[in-house]
Length: 287
Image (spheres, rainbow, N blue to C red):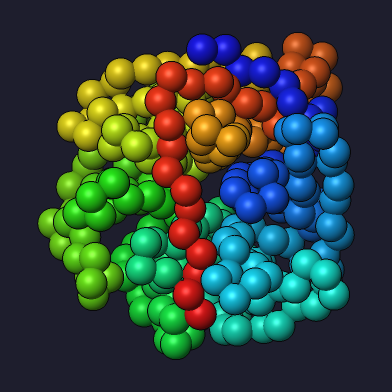
């Protein structure tokens, strides 16, 4: 498996890929440049939506539009009118805090984590259909990838600066978490675990920021695949395509020196890996 450069978008902080099965398009964000991007693989059409705030995560809503996690809270967003409607901000007033990554579970609840660049003061939140907010994990450094096993019994969550992917026992009906354990513990020299997705076989794909690679782990945390990249900072991954066998990977150019960029001219671009396994469609937020 080799990554193919599909959009030369040169993102500063490319993140949060999200496949739209109805449109057959891939969405993703450039956090620092305050934009949402969309690409149609069949026609190679690419477009950008500029927003007034930094958007860090997104999901589609069952009633239309999107829900966004931003630098200053959670919002509903209507793609047609470009209207933003504020929902809530559980960390209002906290210096340098922002949302970073998140996903919707198969009950339609949004899980969204926060981050700061210093310390371990961030949290993972769950937003239910009624828009109630529940703090599900605390003492986090930089919240990152979230995902669920195909049988909905296990949830995965990345705490980046602890270099760990946690696994939890997951109560599908209530959304409760228990029995946290290290699913994969990495070392600083290996790279920083960032965004993740889970395939139909229950294997977990993790983008390794600073590690030039995307890893695939089986349900027991054993390495069963590695895809090397021509850029050092893969940031997140998501399955898409007509047959759900295309893994889209966002990348980052932020923090690279001029010399680095000469060696990595595709840094910040969107890549795609054709896989021999299928992903699972992402649920919509029910609220």
